[in-house]
Image (cartoon, rainbow, N blue to C red):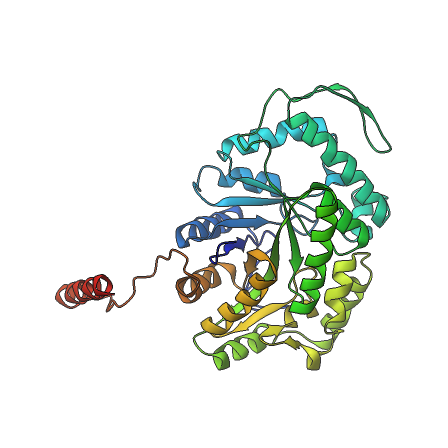
Length: 388
């Protein structure tokens, strides 16, 4: 495993801002803003970009399509709900179309679970385990279609006669599959189908337990799986500044809003959500759950509710701990996503050994008449780098 991890950023297709909760400076979602984040993340050197799914988000497929011509290198990790995608034959054609437009940069993040009430509103009346059964059939059929098979199949959820996809994906044999889930059936699903298993940012011992279980189940099927962790991040030049920024992020939350959000989270049948909620229980006094690991985001945000908080070196130290457990990919986000993408890349990428846009050792004044200062400094920095 490379010591330099893959770092993905997050596209906030449900809105963005400097504060969680009510704010006068919130940023309503727009495609123009999302394109700005995507092109910035690519320029900064991020490896990928997660595009989420859910009733509170813009459509991930259409959002990804709008990024095809404005991005060129960054991979798009597209979240999809098999229960909402209709027939696998149509889905195979849609994925082949999008992957061709992206020249093979597409990755799929399979999301069988969600809030049952949200799914019912979209016409899906399936239990937790039934959604995984459906996803199993769906991915099985899609893989066969992508390989060029003509498929006749009748299962519990899908019925296809002579189904085929006339178009193959650029990725061979198909775009990689990512997935995160914490229930026993989720781990079996991962072991059978998934290329990279993602977990929300739980404390290291809990993540280690998940990795061991999924790895063992995959090995029993003769497969190997990669692993990754999903975090929020709050990095500042000092730990004190980072802790203050974390407190500021939730400074607009009141007890009533937290109680509403916690009730909503407890209504989910997601085992992963239950694990994240249990880390803090909605209590502001129990938000520090491990060194530099803070659960304040989870007071009101479902899903990825924990953040790495600290100085650049502290963040790197924590990421290295998860790498030692087997993670090679981190999917990150921070509020607001445009500015924090730049801050994280500027402060942390050099310490991770990732290629960075940062020019070290330069004197930057911004003055139009300061060329002799900046030029001389740049020459000195070049000589120092060669000497090293």
